Length: 194
Image (tube, rainbow, N blue to C red; front, side):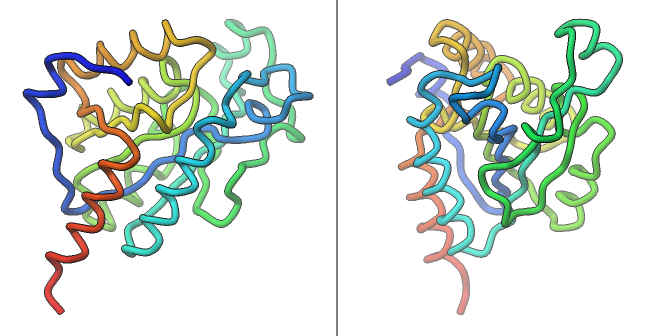
């Protein structure tokens, strides 16, 4: 549980949301991968539940896979992700391949969101402090409301995870839990005219 005053002051609501599943791919989820994130299994089930909730309520879902092929990413990390490690956990959603931390940079994500009149992006996936946080900031400056789902995000350690959420809560994103998002989706369904 992550608590801070900003969570109490800033309440989110959903009216035109999209779910973003950031980099939930075998590079980070397979125990034989060089970049495996120990414990990531703990959030996969919450992401699956959110995906099912968005499908049931007929709201868009997008995913990304990280290949890190930009010159800066290769220079910083000393590699790029091999093709065999760019397999998304959920292969049944529209997936964008990205070469840097930002899911909007050099992808069609913004175009897709705008074409569907999306107003809120609900961010899940890995790693909280890198690709998820960068995508959240990028969404914010593009005019989308950002909701980070704290128990559907994962990182190398809790310090990175909670520091990122605390920073984002100060001026970029609402922080929510899986159950809160699912309840908001149900309420949104009930409010729709027949």
